[in-house]
Image: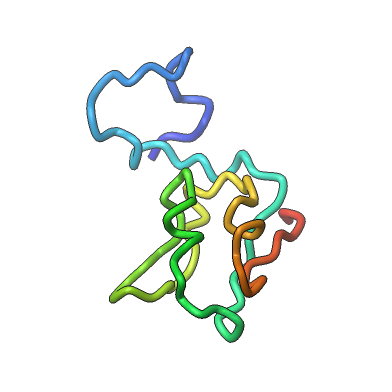
Length: 90
């Protein structure tokens, strides 16, 4: 898998469907932490995530794919139950 340093200049897409080749999670300064107990599986975070980093199986959230999450915090800011919090990346 390629990291952010191997991404072509200008964000060029050299071949279709190549986004899974670039693990961009190392960019983030903060990481979302999901609290399963608070979550009501409304899937608003999944819909709004620009990186498709929310893992959903059988219409329920199963976690966060940190390989692709850039830590933008959209998921935490729109969660109606505050089931996602942002913490400093370690």
